[in-house]
Image: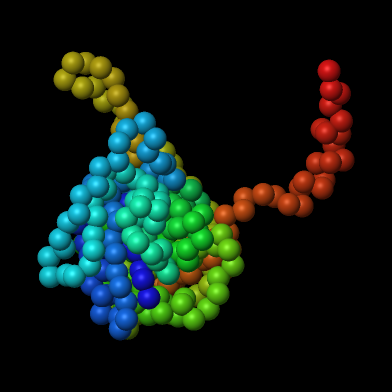
Length: 259
């Protein structure tokens, strides 16, 4: 089983190293890392086209994995690793373990999720995994769960262009409320733009944000984390609203006269 790891917190992030250590212990697992050289959180599915992408082979302490530090985004890392760095494509790409949740509509901003999406584009099974904690995160539970699901994904087929988005509550295993299959919930933020001035008096803004508590369906990932459950959400990449296509044909939009 060949596993490629990436993230958006940077190659030396604790979450990635906890994930790497757990997967290295799997029998028959060959682990590779292709991750950004620094934090790339909230980059979404950005790719680098306006400057060179630099790659450095590095040695992870106390590890035998093949690892590259890359001056690009998570999507760059996965694309570059599969197309240029690894001789044979991986069987599975795992992106994470992210520091902080990737719940609901956050997936559209997430560099972690986009690393998994890029793998899906390239026909490789993919998982994004996040720990829903920022302060003093303990990645043990998340890493153990990743090592549990990796071989099971090899035993089962996943529909094309589909990834698994996994969120882990910040709890110890004895307090865990179980593992549930979920759909994406809604996450909204009360955006806070802090207006500041630099030393030369030029105005700039710093984006923060406070989560707005919304009423979500009980089968959403947001509610699962509130109930101390591990959330697994299958995400498909086809964003087309298929039913609306038929309805819109009746609007007459396609009858626009040609010149």
